[in-house]
Length: 443
Image (tube, rainbow, N blue to C red; front, side, top):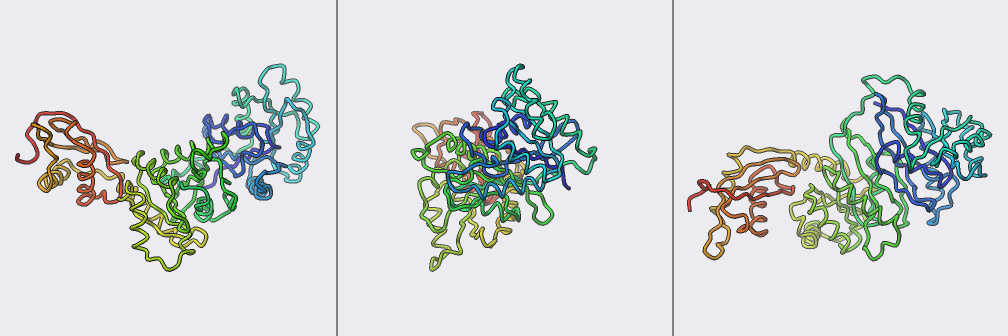
């Protein structure tokens, strides 16, 4: 199944990322006044009037990247242009035609593809008259739009679909069976893993820390099944966050965790577990997300027993003691497929429902083995429990007094349920409700 691809191009700072966000009606690309913010191809699917297409944002053509990634950015733009069915050539109506606009126009003319010229930043009616100047670029008079205000959005979308083949049932997007957020500190190998999963150079891989800035959705297929991987910016210590680009990158990494069905938490095997790793692990735990601790770059490690290393990881990340460990080399594609299969197992566990009788039987056995600590003159009692939702599996426990149940006992109950029910490697959630009823087991 393929859907049309619409690629947004233009020189730096004409508002390409703002246009993608405007057409998608949500903040996807980072928008900053400084040039060169977008480096990778950032894409999203747009559904409009029964048409479905993929909209792709690209880096600025002609940008001089401060970290020496200009060539990598140009490669990503080239891939996006070659794959495009329609190209949106964006210019800035306020600044008029610039030499870089002319350079972009010359490059696009050689492609012999359908081009829609778009004059952005038409934020007031009087600016619309300035769009005529851009006709000399050779693509006709551009469509006026204000990506910031939303003016001209419908007209541009109508123009896009007028150039697309009529929609049919087969073009409906195959929903991915699972969303995987790939998170970790800088240079843990997240982008390399994305490219390995996608089987193409989907994102820039560089030794430069912080190369990835946006959260990038990448579809891939394994065993005929569609998955969505979310590549995220590397997390770093808060005191090292120097600008708003990095702030938004961190916020998007956290948002990616919230969006995910399963989190792939990458740890660099060549480095010690850091405070950043620990804080990131705590955030995954706080969101109750199934998680695989992925030990990357294992091919560079020699003379360390796997079990001893696993013990070290769990000691550093005690909140993720239930999470399985997967040892891979993203660069060499070693054990990557097995990691995805493991993620599918966690996804199934997280979406499992059990009967009330099964749950209460396990709780009764847990109470027999270890009762909650009596507080003063009051003895904690659990009357019965029921599962109310999945992802994460969530249980309501009806008790005599919710205040009598502390985090230690909840941890004990979680471990008992994981041991005896099909939730062995995922987080569980509990709510306590006060109620008077015949209790589960005898006093």
